[in-house]
Image (tube, rainbow, N blue to C red):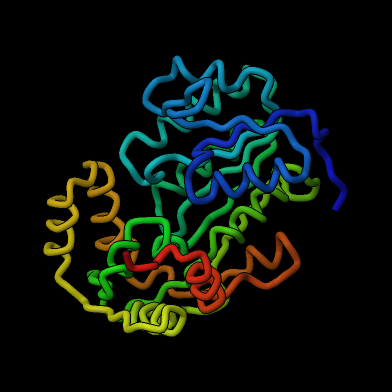
Length: 280
């Protein structure tokens, strides 16, 4: 595909220090593109809960990667996305790429807001991330050797954050992705027992999966000191989204990039090589 956007144009990466955002920023910088990180710790600071911070971050920006924290399913997310898109339209923004959630009705409502914005848009609708086990909520479980989740034998086509980043980068800087909804998954369906087996093989030590009651899980997350919105999100995901609705594969990675999605086994091998699961 032809590169559409001039490298001098500034791309705002919301959630620019998160699992997908940091990867997108790194890729764009490597390609010579100007990047502005959107996060509370950046300068200028970006805060979804404070619209006054948005103007400085949008100044001079022509493209935006929108990753809403902690999830588009959170109550109030649609209002925030609408307000942000409206403000972006008043600036120089021409193109937006939205990270969305697979099987989440609230996330799809946010997709419709972006699609109706009048801006050039692309949606990356993702399944659960491989990196949840190495950079997210489940890393401590892996370190402890037991993945304790209320997931039963449900199947999920875990997708790699590197694949999400590659799709988003293509949509941000190349022509031919406007108006596309790329539903991205890994290449196969996995139960959490399969996840534990792959991690055991990659680490050379036993990682087990133990199915636990939903309320026990939510209570343990709450007692761990996790923020209320994170507790709400995990409760929602395991009680609502992980019900079989997403137990099928999609071809978003292949359609966007012309190559297969990364398999969890390869992710586990590569993550283990970084020593992220090294026991102290």
